[in-house]
Amino acid sequence: MTVRLRAHHLLCMLTYVGKGYSPGFVANFDAIAARLSEGEDILIVAGPDDVCAPLLQDAASHCHEPRIDQRDEFAIRDVSALMRLPVRTGTRIALTPTMLARFRGAFAANLTRTACTGCEWSGLCSEIARNRYEDTRLRRD
Image 1 (cartoon, one colour):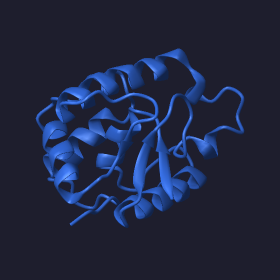
Image 2 (spheres, rainbow, N blue to C red; image 1 turned 60 degrees about the horizontal axis):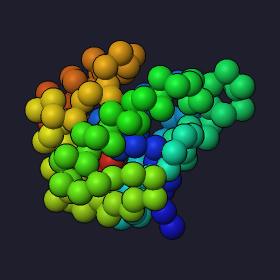
Image 3 (cartoon, helix red, strand yellow; image 1 turned 45 degrees about the vertical axis):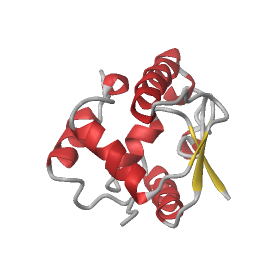
Image 4 (cartoon, rainbow, N blue to C red; image 1 turned 90 degrees about the vertical axis):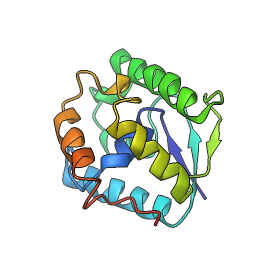
């Protein structure tokens, strides 16, 4: 199987520690982190993805807001530069342990954080990166 992620969720998954918008959101993200930890690949999608699923019952979900699409655009730019290849809708990414370490190193060095500007979770994510990603749910050791 494949995990469908919008581009900025490539960054969110790096620091996910089991906190979120609701118990249903957390349970869903836990399942996604487990799938990625087991080696499922990632398919970049436009708009709401597998992480957004529990929030989509609410017509006013932030997942549909233009500012979130802009976060995806920033993430695509930063991740493309990091990977040294174009990332766009339809790109598949195999999240190997080496790739995860590279993503996390760039995130901790603020090289891929443009999409995080204004995000309510940014402070928590910075703290998690400073603590070397302890207690994150995504593991590819």
